[in-house]
Amino acid sequence: MNSMAGPNTKHHRIYNGWVVVAACFVIWAVAFGIQFSFGIFFKPLQDSFGWSRGATSWAMTIHLIVFALCMIPAGWAIDRFNLQILFSVAALLVGFSLVLCSRISEPWQLYLLYGLPLGVGTSICGPAIPTIITRWFTEKRGLALGITSAGVGFGILAAAPLSNILITAYGWRNTFIIFGFAGCIILLVCAGYIKNPPQSVTNQTISAVGKFTNHNRTRRLLPFQTMTFRQAIKTREILLIILASISANISNRMIAVHIAPHAMDTGISPSVAALAVATIGGFSLLGRMVMGFFQDKVGVQSSMVICLTTMGGCMIALPFIRSDLIFFSFASVFGFASGGDVPQVPAITAQCFGVASMGVIFGMVMAVTVLVSAFGPIVAGYIFDLLGSYTIVFWGGASILFLGAFSISRIRLRI
Image 1 (cartoon, helix red, strand yellow):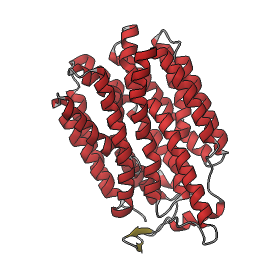
Image 2 (cartoon, rainbow, N blue to C red):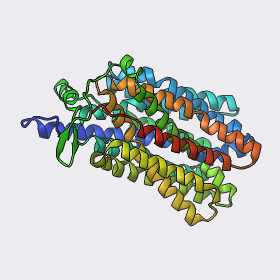
Image 3 (spheres, one colour):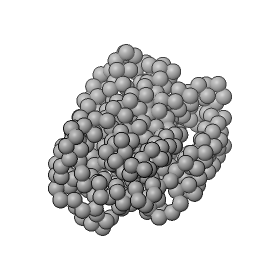
Image 4 (cartoon, one colour):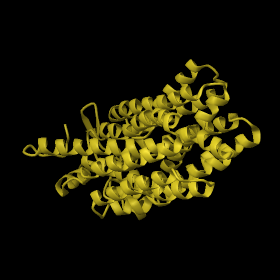
């Protein structure tokens, strides 16, 4: 039941809200499926040009820096402008970037094309999606965010093996072209279904956001007042949320780029490595939905701590994994936990600060998160070039995840 609709309009608004969820699911599947499939292009690019892992990793780092720097302006824009136009621009930028990437011959060309237009395009899809969903839902917000964010997992599940198949059959250049045209068309179609809820629904969301449902009982944890951006950035909670978000994101980025090369270093075939990346995406999809539902039952803090500590345990074990079976077990558990963490960040942001300025607040959280996390893949690449091993990288990631879990446990929710 959607708590925002009145008795005469309930069916209509439930329908519209879930249509928006479906469109957002597909948008994240396309945008982030393409983004996270970069690890599959990694070795073919190295083989074609003889670049080092550190040099190749710069493409993702620059992309993530641009992605991060554009998130706050994107969050500001989605609070004010027509969403269908914004998402159409994002679609064109994503397609333009990937098609032109098929023509590169020098590292700087990959850095420029993969970094700028793709970074700007995906940044529009970043803070916008959770912001829109939190405005449509109250009681089932965790489930709605979980289903929506499962699009990322589905995208990885589909894009990783698909990119491997296409690269094997047609080469990495033609695969960039196929991804560019297909991604642009799908995103343009979905853009037509993206919209904010009616003002009456938004008003009900703001008034209802101070309520927390637990086993059919409603209570307030702390006196709640929705905050502006300036008020939010002065709080202790915003720093703790950012730290926890960074811990998960930086680990995800390192795994996304380096897990396939690491697997092949240990003797695992490229096809199995690609399938493992897809497994992470598949279980990430499951984790987002399950932990979104779990969030509605036990609370966002408990859900987030479970996810972060589980990810940390997986990264500690990763250097010791040598068999295909255990590697797939790692991929399954890590994927589930990393996916389960995703719907927690916008939910805890809304519970701390409200939804009135959610676009710019969440945009800032994600901007700082991604900006810091952008250096994860490049640092991991250079550490490998120096030491010839990812062990220190993975154990460092685990330590950061445990710190993030501790940070989230220290937040005092306002609702």
